[in-house]
Image (cartoon, rainbow, N blue to C red; front, top):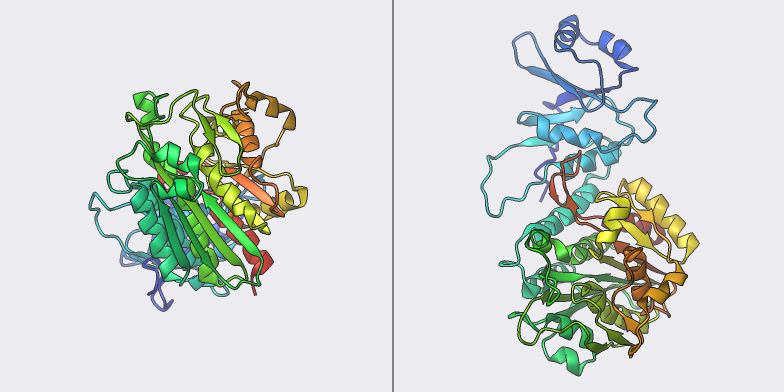
Length: 460
């Protein structure tokens, strides 16, 4: 089924002319005199992000002028053309001149046209783009659809997406691609040695679970994805302030990013053996909730003193990472909305990532740039391990008052020792304000970057 924002024919498509402030005087001179006069009357100068609807002699739309970043811009945004999908009237359009990256411009169009409509009907709009020549429209549509599905998950409130709903979403993706699926639920977590997942989720009316699915041929490189699936986080007995709970439906953003990446990998048929692990819980408050000061024994055997029940994400990830590590995979990638400290350091738009492998970090940085899915490497500063010391257990689940994203990453690293490469992404999973290709609301961060990396490594 074709993507609703793409068109198949350019015969009647309206042209979009891309210009910059530097090229506009020359490009404008090539337009019909009437179009030049109209653009001048509208004050159009080619400034980045501005547009002008150009009429024909009968008052109908003849084409669109749109300003791109100029040569002096240090960091031009290849997603800037995605702004058009929110500005243009219904119709079919084509790029009459090539943007710097036609593929990323097309993807931005698809991503920028997303809206979350589950609970509120919105007026139907049909703004479609004829894909530029040489662009793999089917590939871009798959990526956009994977992102849209996971944005929907992040936006869905916990009343409709508890741990069981996360499982249902994962099962749907697994079945779509013929993956082998299983889920370990409730007290079976204890029987199969996932005590910290059980402890964090046991206070909820919906049982905690570990979602586990595999896909691909056994002889291919083993890539394991782990996603934090906290359907809602009250903070537990160390309860969050009310204002801090307002966005906690997005605390399963790591699981959503993991599912989006898995969907992309399987849809592309990459030559990997893929395993996906999602510990799915709700961190609730009840008589049987885990407590500050409790000592939990992890799957790895490490004992963990609970310094704060609101540092629950690292606990459930630790059990899942230990399971992943037992297979000695080629790569483990985890995604988690883990710390506010990462947002303090880098803000909401720039996810932090942590790895000790310099070559791998370089690959990630290159892939992120090529995919226009920005990330930033943070250090695994080993001397901060002392902040995780406990007098009565092997580790405490909280560090000191500073460097919180680093101590959280160090905690997770403890549970990975056999994998050939490991990276942890601390993501925000939300856009506080709309930008081209990135509508306000739920966001799938770092997944496209890692898909680009795996495609470069394992694609045909």
